Amino acid sequence: MVCTANDLSEWKDFPKGLKVLLLDEDINSADEIRSKLEAMDYAVATFCNEEEALSAFSGKPESFHVAIVEVTVGNGNGSFKFLESAKDLPIVMTSNIDCLSTMMKCIALGAMEFLHKPLSEDKLRNIWQHVVHKAFNAGTATIQSESVKSVEDSVASKLQLKVEIEEADNGKSDNDAENENNVPPTDDNNSGSDKYPAPSTPQLKQGGRLLDDGDCQDHTNCSTEKETAEQEGESKFVETSFAMAEVSIQVDTENISDGKIKEEDDLSSVTRAENPTSHAQNSIDNEKSDGGVGDRSQASSLRTSGVTKASRKKMKVDWTADLHKKFVQAVEQLGVDQAIPSKILELMKVEGLTRHNVASHLQKYRMHKRHSLPKSDDRRWPQQQKDQTKRSCYPTHKPIMAYPPPYQQHSNHPFPPNSSVYPMWGATAAAAAANHLPGVQMWGTPGYSPWAASAAESWHWKPYPAIHAEAWGCPVMPQPPPQLLYNCLPQNQPSFYGATSIADNHHCSMLQNAFDLQPAEEVIDKVVREAISKPWLPLPLGLKPPSTDSVLAELCRQGISAIPPHSINNGSNYSS
DNA sequence: CAATCAATAT
DNA sequence: CATATTGATT
Image 1 (tube, rainbow, N blue to C red):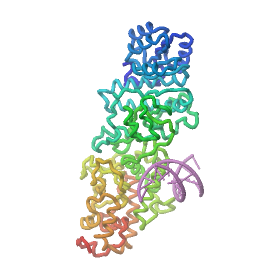
Image 2 (cartoon, rainbow, N blue to C red):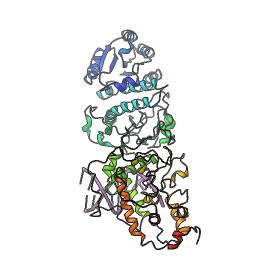
Image 3 (cartoon, rainbow, N blue to C red):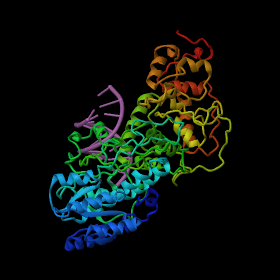
Image 4 (cartoon, rainbow, N blue to C red):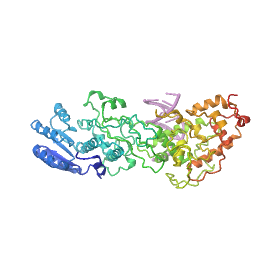
């Protein structure tokens, strides 16, 4: 109990000042080690015999955060005595001898790791990790709530960089063994991996879904390829910097624990099975209750987990519903035509996500979009909307959370605050977020259907299992006239495609001549975009209620181009 | 350097 | 086949 999670959280420049108890009978060795430790700002208390060390520790346990104890053939028992006596202290064993059984014994007795002499700076630098682990494993038992989690996050984030650094070069020296894999199973990461919280349960959030690969994928500050970051670097651990959720340490040969590990490359499952701390997946953080803007988004779920592969591959970004939601929000906020990867990335505020990831996703997003609205236009994503009324009035300054305060209070939202509507390509979620308003439904104003496009673009997203189909439907849809509505947009259309086909093949088939609609649609579209990008403004033009026009426009987007004049009015729904 | 588009990999 | 990453272009 030398150090608690909270202590760590308040430890400014964490590793610095770490109090190290050094027990080494070899004066020279002790000296050498001590000077190295001190060079990295650790506070070292050196002892040459275990008795002293023990009494010092028992006398003032709080004076030490971690111990480095030498074990030699001769003093073996003595060292073990210390090891056994100072259970509370994370202990690193070190020795000249290279005896597997001795190593194992140490580990078995609770040593955090076993390092061979000589102890390089790199090896020594790592010892703080044990303190962290110990701290978390001890204290979290009861709490485990977010408080701890956040602490963990913050600490981990601070450390991340360093870890990366050391990881980068730890391949060189002999065996670093598993630096920290032997963490007791106590760590209960609420099985975050598969657990996704119901949208309504804010606090659970995603637990931690860690992306499989475990390393940081965003190498903005990793030293992987360039050792530039070499410097202690704790100076830079701003939010943006603590990229991934997961500190990885690990040498290629990590069989020590039990042969089973051998994950060839990234079988997350393996990892999970074997290692207690595992969290096979790494997720880019997801903020659950993000009311939209101004959140303290971050809180990535991270956890220093042991296992990771040395392979520096880039992790695969898993565009979860949440992520996508953020993405869409960002896009919408920026305004479709101004949504570029870098900006989106910023808005999303998701650490670990790279611009490329976003770009890629954007590409897909656009693709889908145009796929779904082949007809009416391509001006949706104009490269450079040359003239066309660009909504240039405002923006330049980052739209980010630019929601002027009082911009509406449609107090009456049909939907409960948490009506979880899951992300889809449409603006839906975005709108909700953009609105800050609780529900998903924005603009209660009947008739305004900003999301004309939304339905059309809904794209099936792999929803979390917990999400039911309805969620994918068109809850977001404005309330179009009943008749038409259910002609073409059944309450539960699971996906856009589905809807389309239905529409195409049946009911709506009768619709024809959409020509005259084109213009209307365009206008609508434009307005919608404006509204989206500047939610705080009064709704642009009085988009008339979802008059047939808008509905038709919507239909058009969905590929239903033909709409017989009559059918519009008459309620005769079904087939022919 | 960043955005897009095209190709390739999973 | 869909989605994500890598690579090539501009």
